[in-house]
Image (cartoon, rainbow, N blue to C red; front, side):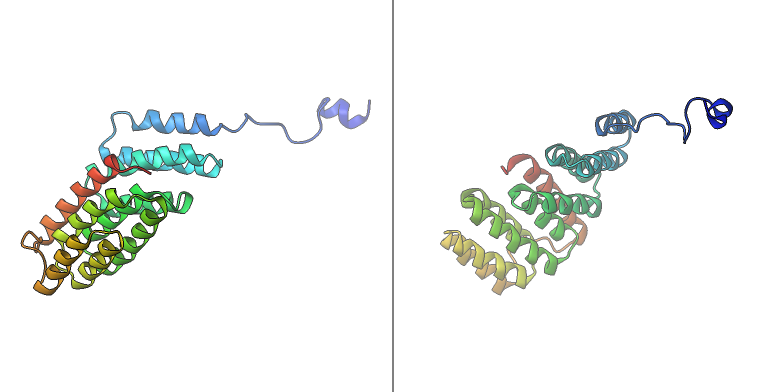
Length: 208
């Protein structure tokens, strides 16, 4: 036996520490911390759980936790963090109709009409690809009802026409000319609240 083995023991080299926790163990700890936490905190923790599975390459479990996080953040009236999580979902699952719909509502809630138009176009592209026009038509009409932004209304009218809703398209076009529908929300706080409620409903009702 060499001098070094006699002096330092049988093992030469750095000692091994405890094994790194598995993704399931990490998420289990985050779930434990989320129990009884306020809605916003719980949403943040579940968003981190989604990140854990994203890094591990398990996109289905990541999607599950990201969607739970969005629900909680929306209930806590935190549209910007919810929007950030929705963007993560779209990066992983670009054809997720439900999340594109939610993202459009969140852009309207945040009073970002230019961004909302972009989100609406992406929503339409996904809807057209998936053949879900019957579900998207009513959603887009509801979006058009609440905003006074002419550009968004014109975009919505064109999309409704392409989806086969000619009468609804004409109605929205008229709203664009008149400065919005009769029920359009001109109060920013009421608009935000209405759109957040619609986003919550869309997360729970749409397929894909």
